[in-house]
Image 1 (cartoon, rainbow, N blue to C red):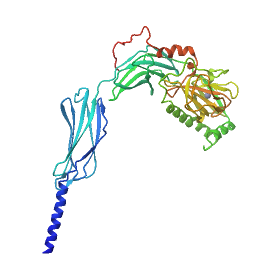
Image 2 (tube, rainbow, N blue to C red; image 1 turned 60 degrees about the horizontal axis):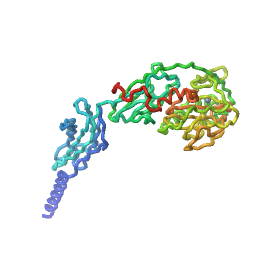
Image 3 (cartoon, rainbow, N blue to C red; image 1 turned 135 degrees about the vertical axis):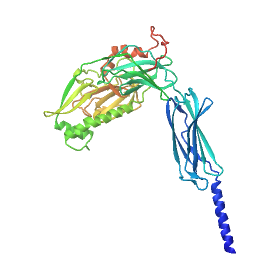
Image 4 (cartoon, rainbow, N blue to C red; image 1 turned 60 degrees about the vertical axis):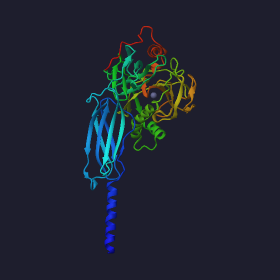
Length: 452
Ligand SMILES: [Zn+2]
């Protein structure tokens, strides 16, 4: 008799366990990003769906907008009510849709995902994602008229972008220059930009504005590129010089002095430029500089050692390297005091590869100056300097032969011709007018938005 009871209890126990499992009450879980999503056209959205009990049976996804509901997906997964889902574990479900296909009006919408499981109770979970449908491109109007910009030179443009634009600036070829609120014109923005020294003649700087939904407006600025004569220069390398520089800059490099030197002149130069671009991403939104930038006192500028000079490096009778010189080499007496060329804040004061002991100043609105090959640095990051304050002394650190100052100007991390910034007349003609209040003749209500 007893064994019959044991079997009965075991079967009842098993059945109870089975029924408990089949009637499980845990809802599926639906995980997705909780942020509001801005959608302008095509959109892909991923939901991670799981059910700890009997497994996921069905997933439905729909778009709700303007009182309508648009089904996007209805998927049933393998399994049955007796044994649950064939495959347990989390499922990744992706929907892709184009709001223009549904003809949705701009405004709020919801993406709703509903999942049910194989439980006999039919547990259902639902998650809504808030969408903002925005198919309109930002409206942009450009205030700056015809502008002459020199190859390797700097310029500025003023424009207005409506509230929809959350990201705007000037695109020049591959480079993007961020904008700042205009200091005088309410609602306008100003961006300084540089034209690469090797820019394609067809390069057209353009205002680029993008909204959160990814809609873009691009309006080409009216610019004329002014060509400048290209200068070239020859640097004769010798082994003692290269050995000395390699020992100073990176003694761990393998190979002959020439091989190590070429690595420094090539890949380290590129890494240093990348570091400077990173560093110059952040700039004071206020203009700190005033008037012309100071040149190292008692120094001369020779065109042959100026900006954009194509340098050919020779060793013996071989050409071993070519680089473009992106600054001015200024020589005075040895260990001459180096003044800050304008008001600004120190953002770098350290040994920087090919530049040796280096100081970089932020002058605001994306404008920076760089002082290299110093023998001594007299300032620290964060220091606020006035035009003329001594920041260091000239020297021969980094890739310098004799004692001199390598002086560079950068706009948002890109090297530009410093001669323009040393010229008060150029600043007055090209930059100042774009930072001033409303010009008398310009209409403050541009003739309506243009899109492109
Ligand atoms: Zn130099």
